[in-house]
Length: 55
Image (cartoon, rainbow, N blue to C red; front, side, top):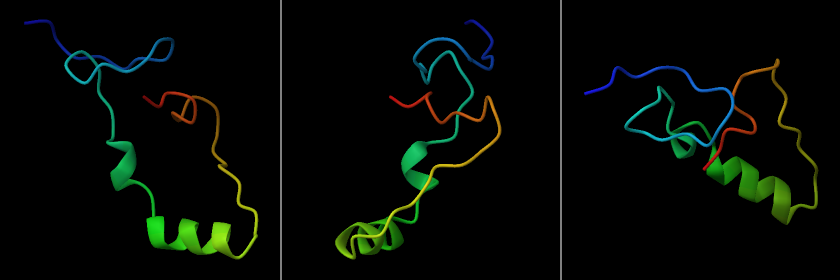
């Protein structure tokens, strides 16, 4: 089997790439509260932290 590696260009494939499951990183109750309240929030992070590497 091929060794896993960090992917920065294509969609993430769990069998090939290292990744952090996206649903475990989010505080859903807080986000739902912000949306229901009509408040805004920002996804902020340095480059190459996976903001666009979602599947």
